[in-house]
Image 1: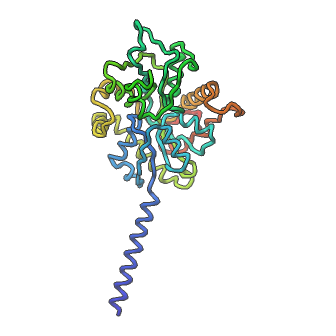
Image 2: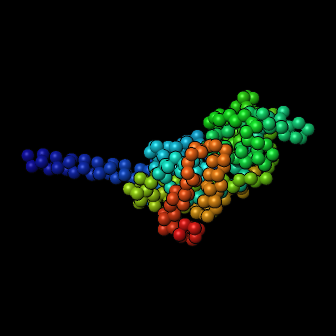
Image 3: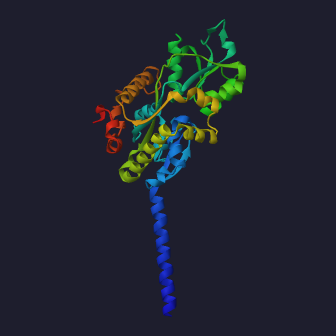
Length: 330
């Protein structure tokens, strides 16, 4: 009888320990929404190198087709953190989504490309008025399209804008459903490979410096600050790893078949991986907000643009790397 009681007690203890371990694991789970782009490389490196686990975080990556979809998932509570360019954050602020940017992970002055069917080039001149241009609405693709058109002296209202998912754009251009597309890498490279000689990239000066940031749902950071700190430390290590071992980081991109070796050789130096929060982020958000209001991409009855400092939380980065936080956030 005593042996039976002892066995039952041991079984109950083991069961309790197992349930406690499972509960602890569940508490450490962090859902990170991430789009398949080179700009998301710090998240992929932190996952592969197990930097997240090193800092007591169990990552679950939620792949989105674009940063816009990642921020949407964040606002809907389907993700705890997300990586994206700053533009979806600008629109999220107009919608009063309770999210905060924690840090910029990478910048690129040449990630966006404008590709056209070769027949749009007549005697070396580009004819865009009245043409169909594919883009991803409320994304960096959208902003770059309008910026590029204005640079070329074309009123954005004089073209036919065709909204679609990022993954659709290369094939839409190749099939002639649109005449041009505004898209980021590696989609731009895919479109050029798909179209062969029939699709060309239009050269332009670097019109837009894109930032790629990590954002968090406010409710999550308030309840799970330790996990957020762990994510930040893991991403910081990943950024350092990319800088110290670029060939290994590039090999990860090749294994995931996100880009080609040719793309890496041609474009790698355009990416600047550094975890920071600079004043320029607020300036960019403010400029994009004015563009969105001017072009009617947000409600015109809003009293004023959001206060973007309220959508940036520098406390976690300042705690980890205070020298990388610009004075404007202090």
